[in-house]
Length: 64
Image (cartoon, rainbow, N blue to C red; front, side, top):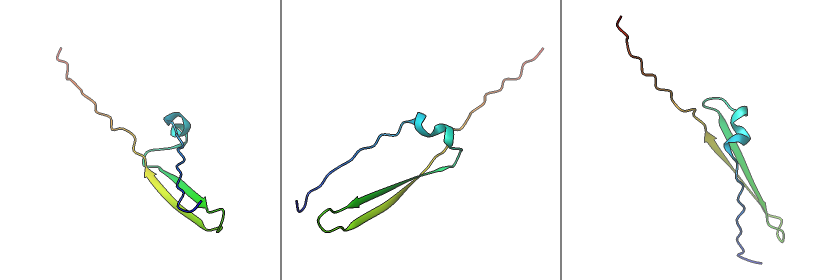
């Protein structure tokens, strides 16, 4: 139908990707849509930069 719109959601959990990435790694998601009637194609890439959490150390000097 003309002017139809739709939405597709894909959930990706942390467990799906964390073993395959390192600090400051990129995740690339490519989307693709094809209009059935006209065979027109639309494509777009999305990039997400991943940062591991910073670690904060607290050190206390012990006096003996």
